[in-house]
Length: 533
Ligand code: FAD
Figure 1 (spheres, protein in one colour):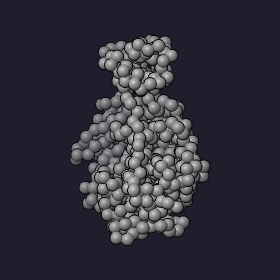
Figure 2 (tube, rainbow, N blue to C red):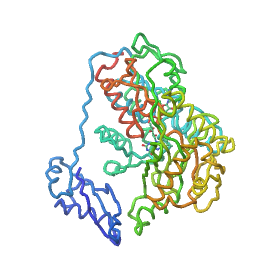
Figure 3 (spheres, rainbow, N blue to C red):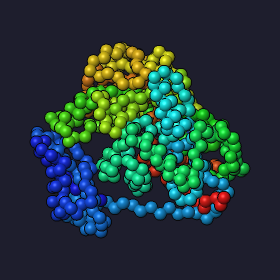
Figure 4 (cartoon, protein in one colour):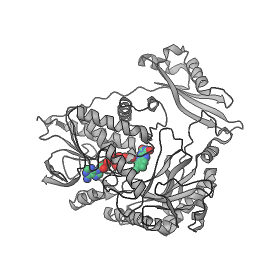
């Protein structure tokens, strides 16, 4: 693929996407018929020098990679990216049993996909139900407040990212990202995820893709056991020999453990089994909701509302007193705040959006970092802290899974008021006015106030006092890490166990979790040939 950058067009250009594409082809000296595919990779606004201009990066794909690479020198603004090739080695010692993958989030799904494609016929255990029943459970919870601890926004087929914005952005430049993108494309993702700088799928499309990938795993002999949770491990010396599950015991000599950041009972089991679990930094705070149009005014200035511009996104961060960092996270343009609890008696917020991202509000988590020093380096204390905050939010919300909320202006003054103006909160169970600062330790509430004030200096929308804060956001990433060997990726004290994905502390987001799943499956395959069953 060729990327042609820095194509600058005035706002008045009648069809800027087409014009930018035409200019890209001119720069490459290519007749349009030679391009197999063209698309907008990135579009931003440069408003630095008075009149704002649109700045495009156009992706161009030809039939022949050799030709693409020859064109790369056409101009300094052209660059060529070669799609990586994947050749996963299969090792020598045959497994005695089929490999087990625990968890069907992105990490488990992609681990199982690679294993299935390579002839290993994995057994996949997922504590929650398939997507159809999971969606029903989530909708029932939103309507009635009846929470199913095994079928919710965190648990069930597809894992935590299923009800999400489906952002596939990542800052890791791992070539395995291309493996994940190719699989997404083969299973129906929009073609533009191949060239967009910030690819996104949306919860609506993501569900079909997940079902389709599961279908491929099953068609290759993989087996998915829904409503089946891992509850214990069996070992001899330092070797994994079997697993205990809610559906009985299985012999097992290789297991990819991809349980996500909310599997607190599984973490407790690993802790009791004296496996090397340590504290890892994570963050807590709340969701901020603004009008999407206000965000776009702040970002695009006079160009706001231009039909070619993508929905405005932002990412803000600020170092605050005490060595902490306050930052925005998982911003969902045109999205809604979702009810992401997985334990009874707790309220947890998160955000999601449809592919069209056409909702009225923008939301983002605004969170402050905490780490092992806050919890005496004890993973159990870190989980207990998250749970305490969620329970405090539940009580403040009124006890029926409504969420506590207040406006930014109120939070900055510690008033606990919710005088709604232009921004209507979207949390599906409804909100209750509450003093969010009182639900958090004083130091963290102070940090969040300092951070929000600084954000107001960086992005005008953050100065609006009527933006709504809904809380609490506690599941930003895993509070724990299960240590693994840097080379074999096996747990440092238990051979055959591959800690994987976000729950084990090796990923943060859909793409990085999926990549880690592929990486763990490849590590397993380097050592073992499939079981000869
Ligand atoms: P998970 O996705 O958490 O999957 C773990 C799976 O393991 C779950 O299905 C769970 O049911 C299962 N499980 C747990 N314990 C057991 C057990 N003992 N036995 C059997 N199964 C078990 N990231 C992005 O990159 N972009 C986004 O737009 C985005 N939006 C998000 C929106 C929401 C609402 C949420 C909650 C998260 C979002 N994330 C997003 C984060 C992303 O979803 C996670 O980083 C990612 O899903 C982690 O993948 P994983 O496979 O490691 O774990």
